[in-house]
Image 1 (cartoon, helix red, strand yellow):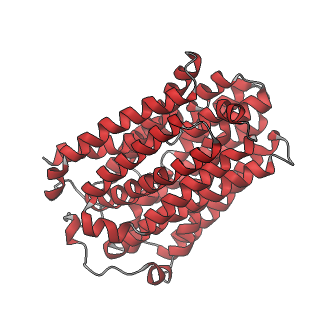
Image 2: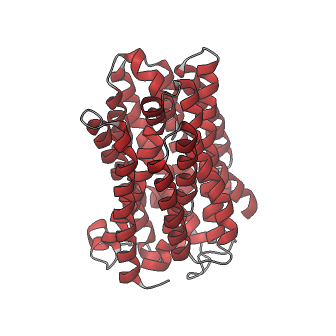
Length: 395
């Protein structure tokens, strides 16, 4: 039953990734039909992120009351309804309204599942599970590109993904009895195997957790990482169209190379975790990420830019799962759900603020500045992660 539960969690991560890349890949086709500026993608992204921030900060309370299984199933159903709403929208205001349940659903899945896996499974499973997120995020642009190339338009792409989410949601509801069984897989190397319910009944609140050494820079580093990932994911397609004159249909597919890089990298990271601990995986990812940004800066052709986005994805691959998996080891099991919930909130705050900021900056700056903006986010992330390692010293 333990292995079957793991399969369910894998599918949940795929469902989490499926919608995440849709807005960025579809936006070059959406904004002309809605007669809004290209920068308005940041508004929708901000609303989605605001919803995830709220649900992430409530994750400890909600997950403890209902359990990770019910939270996951209901959250996926919520995102399915939101995606179907996107497919029926013909006005920008409607997209903004449907972005609210999408954000609430995404945050609920993210915080509940990440803490459950960090407590109950090894680092390799965290990498492979996030690889499944990459599978979903890579498939999303391909489906959208097929809808655009077939002349069905962006609403069809959203509708197809919504149907897939509905099927996954039904499967999750059917599998709810599996979550009542204790996980038997090896947990984090610094904590014993335990049932989710075995975590202490009175975990600290967010204010108390912020006073723990290392928590603030950890939140800052995660903020910067997800700001970088979401900014690249949202604007890569538009960058290719505006800076390299790539057709919108092609750009939607090419932008998926970023998510393909994340997916491939996380598959490889699962094997590398047999040899390298979490903090070394984070450093390795940062090194590859820096190389990808450099390629994006020096590339003058669409091919070079696409390679740069793929390498950036490879660099991003080990960072997110390694940071999450290191949380119980860095701060203890009692703090893990609270800190991971706060990390999710910080992550989505970065996703909420930074892509719209770049969208606003495009009004004054040429698209060629985009790689340097990504480089600035990377530098801040690397410095804050180094500070976190110094303060925790548990690796």
